[in-house]
Amino acid sequence: MELLQVQCQQLSYQQIQGLKLLQMSSWELEQYLRELSQENPLVDLEPETPSVEEKDELLHYLQWLEDNDYQNLYCQQVNEDELDPLSQVGTAGGLEETLFRFLSQQLYSRDLEDKMSETVRYLASCLDERGYLTTPLRELSQRDHIPLTRLEQALDILQGLEPAGVGAENLSQCLELQLLRIREEGPALAIVKHHLEMLARHQYSAIAVQIGISTEQVKGAAAIIRELDPRPGAIFEQAEQIPYILPDIFVEEQGGHYTAQIRKPGRQYFQINEYYKNLLLRSQDPQVTEYLKDKLQQAESVQQAVFQRESTLLRCAQAIVDTQAGFFRCGPQALCSLTMADLSKKLDLHESTVSRAVRGKYIQCVQGTYPLRYFFSRGVTAERGGAQIGGTAVRLRLKQLIDQEDHQNPLSDQKLAALLTQANCPISRRTVAKYREEMNIPNMSGRKRGFHL
Image (tube, rainbow, N blue to C red):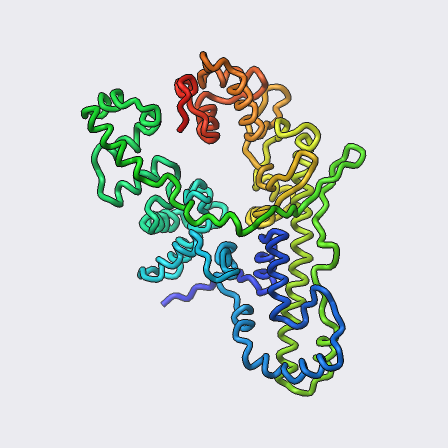
């Protein structure tokens, strides 16, 4: 037997607590602290001085709390659910169902290794509101250091769960997965894989010629396809969960310079209750002392994590504002290229830390309120000066060209690419088609006839 010495880094509880709070929005953070104050007497959101009667009563019940506080013991455990940003979604009332929870529950009945089960749950947390997985597996593998082969196996498992079609990359694959689930391998399968755009334009005869079947068979297949669900995750949408957007960052302009300011709740997030802190020093009961000591450590740990969250979020926000200063002066057409990797390198932070910092966060400026992720996009290199033009800005210029075209003689993708190149946005015809499809804009013939996918 050969013994190998391997070095591996394990996260401390403080680091885990910091990562957990970093990925929370301001609204989520305040909700979390409100719940924490309910179970930890040393956390004061609005400090008050207890009356003499309250002090005596609370002192007598400290031991009872320690013996019966099962919920607090559970909350202090560090497990994978705590690290998962979606595992707590929809649990405020205890009854709401989410796509993530629905998929996770199906894994309990499957004989999966722990790592594989965790990976499936990870992919489930990456799904958008439609139930699609639009981020390539290779990118997820590189970003979060998960073997690509394991992600591929996990995706196969995820796509085998209910609702059918979940985990698809796009509409075509979503419909294909649903047809395979009902063992439909006839013309309908070939149509959703290769002729979906033609079907949207009702070109039944053309499809029939290409597949080699009758027009009536194409219409029969179309009837089957119409029964499928193009958005299998939509039934789990909870629009009322967050009734409003609470900006995390405000942008202020002073003398032509833009500064990011973090949102403050008008007071400290919370304070350590001095009465119970002093009681810890005075108490002669070892069980009371142990209880208060644990609660104090928890409160101080969260307090430090909140401070670190503010620092990291503000650094990321200011770097975004500096990079995208043109946006704050001129609007979306001035957005330049910016990736998570660019920002992580500039700030000397891990890319996953940047991703957590911007997740679910919003920035408010004179142009409106935008998610921080809005300011990230890969770009194209402009011919003049070699500047990088952001993909969002290119999409906006593309849409402007299409909105201004002659609707009787719409522009082809090749012509749109040529016009964008003349406007110092050199992109290929294929990229024009990709951006157009992402914006749900039909091709030239579809726009002329008024069809929409």
